[in-house]
Image (cartoon, rainbow, N blue to C red; front, side):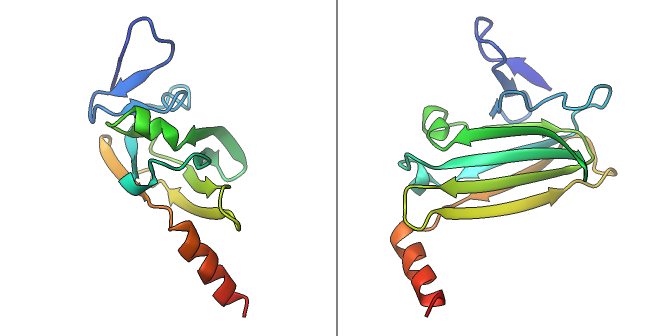
Amino acid sequence: MTNPTNPNAQQQYKSSQSGRFVVPGWMNLIEGTPDAIEIQLDLDKSDLSRTQACLLIEYWATNEDITLQSILPVRAFGANQDGWCMLIPARGRVLIRAIDTAPNPPLLASQWINIDPATQPGTTVHVKVDFPDPAKAAANNLQLNN
């Protein structure tokens, strides 16, 4: 499902399905269980200039077992215009948290993706990441506290 992008680069792969870079470590997560789903991270272009933002990504094979956790800085999207993805088996859960600590208060959003074991191999899931404008987010928080 993937091809090395550079034979001299360590652990840097591209999806043969989409051409996106695979977040390092995000393939062959469970020994003996094939990768079946490609989760594509689609960052809004207006967020490419964020310096403190990152995505915290977790894969849970079971509700009790966190299998993998990674941090993907938003600036990685500026360096790779094709985008990023993760390859996972057709089971478990994925938690994606978008975090930007620069504004005050910080921005945080999270989303669980529950994977149906009957999902067809080759399925693609798109996760759109669009941070709110920090000034508007802070103003909305102030309104909620009134």
